[in-house]
Image (tube, rainbow, N blue to C red; front, top):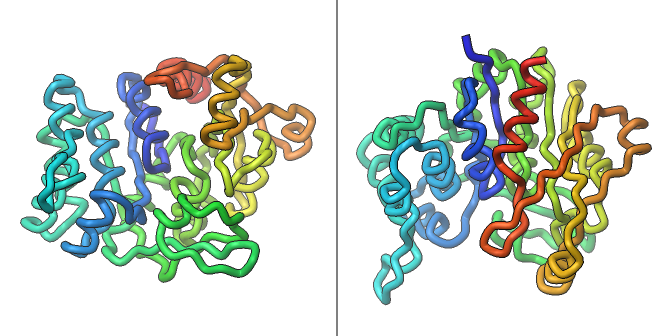
Length: 316
């Protein structure tokens, strides 16, 4: 019997993790936040009243075992002067399936089957009207995930306009898990959307599985400026119930000067440093390693190294 892992996330971070983890002898359930309202996903949500399909498409593609040429077709974006402009083909296919089946969960199941995905992908909710909100420190209300990501205003709190109805399969997966993982990615728009649900928090509290956090390599402007690894853990623990983060995996490799400078000047992002003393005080177990890799001139977690650490922890 393979051990069961539930991973919470959204966006690029989760897809990147799953690329490596999918080949280990584990059963993965990837739970995806579906509050994105930007680009192709935003247009489709408006027109077809769907949950966000973009992150789901990315995750299905990264878990797929088929040839990369077919995966590339799903990731293909139209560049045209018509209404198709900016749409990813995979988003259109998922929306068509949703239109045909009337169920987002079923649409994901069929697309996963088509693309030979051996793990399970679940949306947090099938609700079509999920809206993520933020209140800035100056009292300004920010409406929608895209605006939250883009605003330079410092956020005081994140909440849902109306709490989504969580899928019962998500709750069941948490209850059966041997390990729960909060993926790397934007704290405010990829991880918190899961922790804002009372049902998710209650299920994590009931779970006997350890809760692991994969810490980001760099900070997010307007969200986690000057945050250390300890700050990330403390921040997430505030949103959790009685079951706090048990273990954090963090990168300890120093980012090369020219790359650090590029991130600081172009994106206002700084390296997330490990503060050993604070982590001892929290307390949380720290697993640190050289997890840095550069792909397309972008800093990334080394997917295979990260997955090996997760698997080693799971098999203790």
